[in-house]
Length: 87
Image (tube, rainbow, N blue to C red; front, side, top):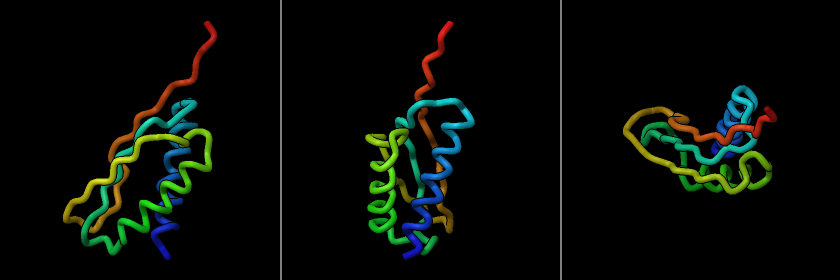
């Protein structure tokens, strides 16, 4: 089931973005699945939701899955919550 592997890759990229931008939490992600990408969207979505609930940084985040006619799986938009800074 390659959908779970793809979901894990997207989740790992989200975690990498959070680290790179020093964010505590990922609030929202928009993922676009191309209709010609050979991905079963329900399987991808199920795996992705299982992964996000297992990590404190992604737990409870909004996930929007859109579709287009491409061959791609794209992470289109991410909303992060910055770490509180002591000034």
